[in-house]
Length: 351
Image (cartoon, rainbow, N blue to C red; front, side, top):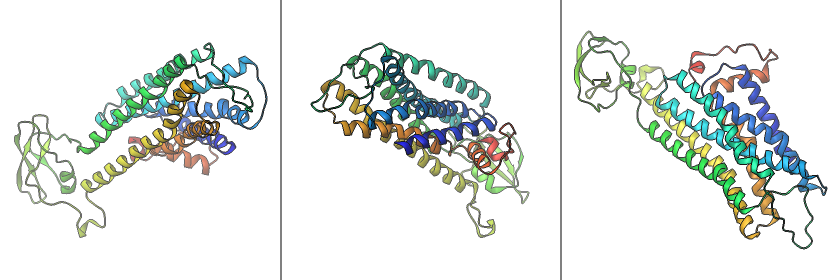
């Protein structure tokens, strides 16, 4: 429990400082909300949760009510921030050029996370929880609210609806990654001197096509199909894959396939992490509120498995952002001020 608590506080603090150092990107707003929620879990929830499992002591009603409310608030905000982050990633894939609009919507979503989480958590402070004690069981300092009505209300908006939204969003992301991105081209004669880039920009035509000419390096005109929206379609394009003369580098099309596979693996890993950490707890909680039949050891394992998600989130989600990863490396290896602007490469700036 101590290791999980310390890892949660240190990891999220490091990522929060890294986000402060780098310039803002649309995905940084929901990521900041996620890191802040997980940091509050490590500071305000996990220490008392560990103490009540290890020691016998009593606290007054106000402290226990504040602790249980903060538990629901921070965990709900963390899960809702994952939904906002999933939406931003889907928008980044489907509309990569609408950066300003994505940034505004990401700020709005990140700001809405906390009022919604407050509405879900606030009734916990005023709804009494039934207490059941088995023979020989010691009363813990603070109990989790197991009121049936509130439990089903909270788990619906804290987990099951957000989980459905996340699964849907990541399904859309996988579907968008499966289709090659359309690359716009100018109509008319085009002087093109990089066949590999030309090959990487070809997509299948989905609209009534027109004819256009492309001038190759050999000064030979080649007719290609051009859609009304300016998309290229090269049905007779030569094989432009990896060759011995490419100095060991694959073509742009092969690089696209590799990026697609990496993104797919990352998305599957993120969804698996979220579901594995939180599903047992949100199955156990309504079950115990209905029949009071969950063992104490099961409570502990399921509760702390959910807390582990707050420690793993900064490692997984922040590692997927090149700019945050670069800032983290600089924070660990440099003593520069946090207000110094990070020198970012063009590739990192686009991320």
